[in-house]
Length: 228
Image 1 (cartoon, helix red, strand yellow):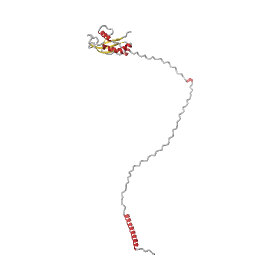
Image 2 (cartoon, rainbow, N blue to C red):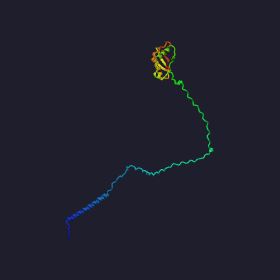
Image 3 (cartoon, helix red, strand yellow):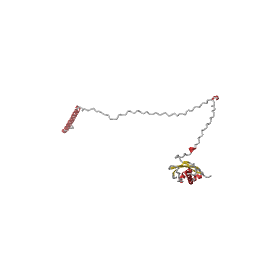
Image 4 (cartoon, one colour):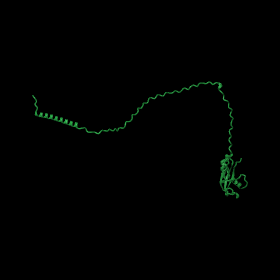
């Protein structure tokens, strides 16, 4: 039994065929228009490389070769000195030198007594009175001092003796103004007593009118003697 197409089927097939032709024609037109249009002009492209300049190639580090092991040095063997035979005739004895004469060493100078003894205190010229002065103003001064004199106990225990000379400065009324040592006795205890004695005996006898000046200096001895 043969198949008969209906009019609707024919119309549908014709429509499909026509649609395919239209699509194919449109595609050809579009392709032709794209092929005919010239390509747009473009400005040349400049490329700037902002990357940091490449660092110069580093030299290859040489791998240090293994240092040769130090060779242990052996101490050199000292040469054995050869014995040289010297003939007896070649040995000469040194001539004997004369004995040196002893040189006398210089004898040290004895210390001068003046250097050992203290210097007297410089002052205006004063009247010096001896211990055996006659009955005068000076004698009365010595008697006054002798009546007030004391023997230090320490000096007596040590049996110290001596004579200390003191310089006494007084006014016209016999008042003691100053006392100084003119010569030491050799004992500090006796010297201290000699300096204290004029102040203890103050006032001293007034000087006579013939002795001028407002003040007078008198150098007197102060004896310290122990009985035997």
